[in-house]
Image (cartoon, rainbow, N blue to C red; front, top):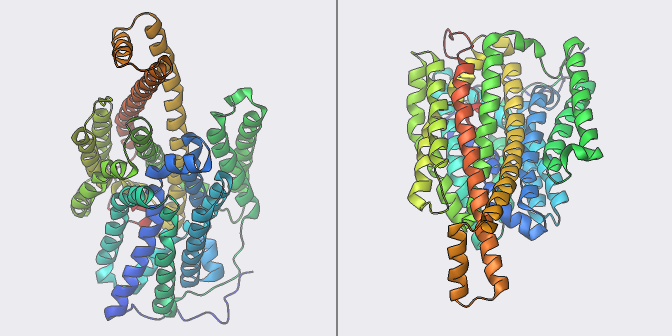
Length: 521
C-alpha cells in the first residue's frame, strides 16, 4: 500500500511572487529551450560528426533517432517518478543529468559511445518538458496561467530557429562537440535557480508501484524496432539474420506488451484511452505528421551539406525561417481555437506543410538560397497551427483526471513516430538515390548529351582521365541524390494531404483544452 512520506515538504505554498517568479519562469523556460534545442541543433552537424568519428552520414542520424526514442520511452514514467522523488527534485535532477550527458556526448570518442550517451540524455530529458509546465502553472496564479504558457510556447518555438543556426555556427567555427558542451553552463545555472526558487513548492512523495514488466516490454519493442530501422540499410535488411531477429523481437514484445498492459492493475500506458475516438484519431495524426515533419527536418540539411556543398552555418540559415514565422503566427492560434473547431486549423496546417514540401519537390541542383528559404517560411506557419490544435483535439474527450496520462501517451507516440519517420525517410532517400544513379550511368553509356558535353569540357580543360571520371561521378551522385530527395519531399506532401482526411474522422471538440507543454516541441 502506498504511503505519503513523513518528511515531504509542504505543498500549500502559494505562487511565487515578484522578481523570483519571473527569474524562476526564465530558468524553467531556458531549461525547456535547452531540451528542445537538442532535437534540432544536431541536424546540421551530422556530416561533421560522421566524418570525425569515421562513419557514414546515415549512421550519423542515429544521434537524432536515439535521442527521440529514449525521450519517448521515459515520458510515460514521469508521473511515477514525481510520486517517488517530488516535482522540484525530479526536475532539478533531470536538468543536472541532462547537462552531464551533454558533456559526455561532446567528449565521446566513437559513434557507439556518442549514441549511448544520447540515449541516456534522452531518458533524462523526457520528464523535463511536462514538469516544466507543471511548475510554471503552480507558481503563477490561475489568472496568469496564460502568460506562463505563452512564455513557454515562445521559448519552445524559438528553439527550432536557434538550433540549426547555433549548431551550424559552432560546427563551422569551433567543433561539433560544442553543440553539446554549450549546454553545460546553462544547465548548471538552471538547476541551481530552479532548486532555490521552487523548493517551497515541492510535492509530497510516496512509494508508488511501477509496472516493471510493462516497462521492460516497452523498451524491448521500441528499441528493437528502432535498431532494425537504423541498422537495416547497412545489413541488407531481411537478408541479415540480425535484422530478422530484431523484427521478430519487436513484433513479439509489442504483442506481449499490449496483452500485459490490457490486464495489469497499474499499467505504464493506459491503453483504454484509445476507446476515445478523438484521442486515437488525433494521436494517429500527430504521430504520422511528426514523423514526416522531423524526417524532412533531418533530410534537408543532409542533402544541402553532402550534395549542395553548403556549410553547416548556411544550412542552419535555410532552416531558421521556419521558427520565425511560427513565432509570429502563434499568438493568433489560441484566439482562433477558442471560437472554432480545431479540425479546420489542423487541416490548414497539414495543407501548409504539403504546399511547402511541394515547393521543395521542385528543387534542383541549381536552386539558389532564396528558393531554399521560401518553403521554410511557409512551413513555419504550418508549425504554429499544428501542435496546439492537435493537442486540443487529442484531449477534447479526455476526463480531467486522465489528462496527464493522455498527454504522456500521445507524446510518447509522437516522439516514437519522429524517430521512426526519420529512419524511414533517410533509408528511402538512399534507396531511390541508388536507383537514379544506376539510371544516370545507363544514360551515360547511351550517350546522354549533358554527360557527353561535360566529358568534352573536362577533356578540353586538360584534366587527366582519372579526374574527369571522378568529377563526372560526383555530378552523377549529386543529381541522383537530388532527384531522390525531391521524391521524398513530394511523397511527404501527398501524405500530408491524406492526413487531412484522417483528422476529420474524429468528432467536433466541445471546447479547447488547456495545452500542455509537450505540444510545442
